[in-house]
Length: 57
Image 1 (cartoon, one colour):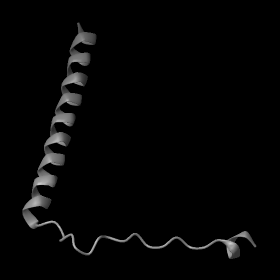
Image 2 (cartoon, helix red, strand yellow; image 1 turned 180 degrees about the vertical axis):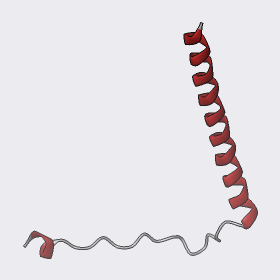
Image 3 (cartoon, helix red, strand yellow; image 1 turned 180 degrees about the horizontal axis):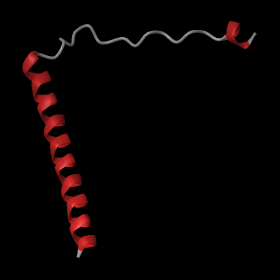
Image 4 (cartoon, one colour; image 1 turned 90 degrees about the horizontal axis):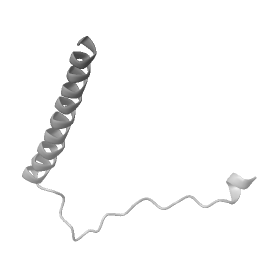
């Protein structure tokens, strides 16, 4: 019954006057996230490596 009374949410609208991002802008975003992911992964590996070396003596 409650489901029948609820109104469905309108779909999210993107402003029409705003053009979609260019290919270069999307590449820049992927490079930023990729660089952050690489730095995060390498820092995690270095942390684990140093913990193993410390535990080994």
